[in-house]
Length: 258
Image (cartoon, rainbow, N blue to C red; front, side, top):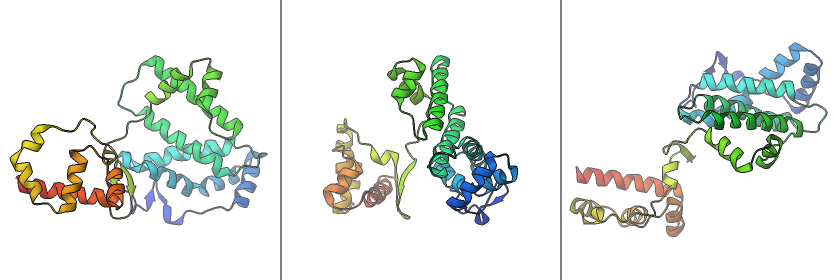
């Protein structure tokens, strides 16, 4: 969606500098000693990292400029809180911090209503998680978070899941440059078998117009409840190819049934 966008928040992404690990470490040491110029240089030198992370969320139809700014906040927090005494790469610590900041932004702009008590528990859990991650330089487990909060693991897990933004059925989960596989393509209907589909004359006639492989895919997909991955394994092609053949077959059937 934003692949060809060059300027984000007034920044020319084609000219963003990339720092070496040695440069990052030197700038981090200077920044932690109060050198504001080093801090600013470190921020500018890691904007490509922010951009690459923000790109993961572009399919959520959020404004890329907004997400980029939020990601920069996460980057600044990572710079200010990074422990320079540990033998850990800065990017290892910065990536989850930036992702966490973007997720918090998306969560706070979520239109789905969650009870105040559950939301409060989720916020406390996220604060504990971030603090643990900052101290241990790794992702905290739900068990650790629940223990520190004095809450049951099930309650903490449910609260954190409740504020996660829902994923669209039409969000792309795979793209090989030509074909996309969406979330809905990963699902199957275990209760399929509606007789009205089979008995519908126009549907039968439309299916007769399909090639043998297309008809086989449609039958397995919609009448036998198979996923695209299962079909791909059965007939020996990629899931992306199954997705393309399925979409093409459905389009042919629509034209026949008009």
